[in-house]
Image 1 (cartoon, one colour):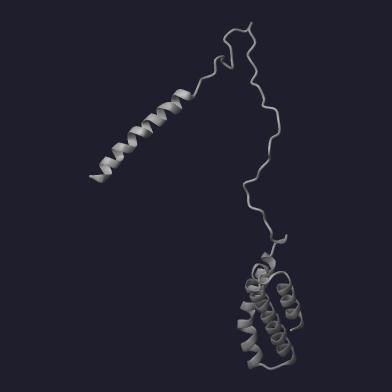
Image 2 (image 1 turned 45 degrees about the vertical axis):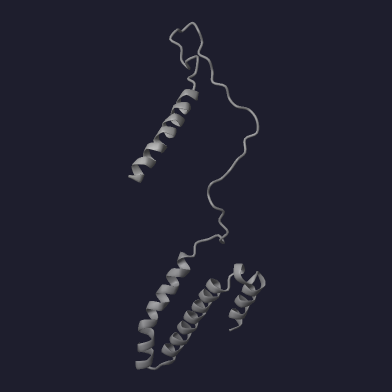
Length: 140
């Protein structure tokens, strides 16, 4: 019941508003193209003045370059660790030990770097603390 009353009360002003919009629109007096070849067609007027340029796309504040290759290298190393660690432990050798040591250090460094980048942001800590955290990560 209330929705019918509300619809009825809103439809009348909406229809009146639509009629005023249609009535206020005027059609051009002269057509753009004339039927006669003797009378030239009226050229449309261009607006002159200052035009303000604007953009609707967001500003990118990220660093340039593609990080896909680094991401693929991190995933490949994580996958390789599943085979390197058991093989290195079952068949001890200098090559296996070196491979395990290098791959674990790389894996830990990339993981800690991701943690520092994700959680020690300049928005939260200012510009000095994230730089200091990345510098300490290089020392560790």
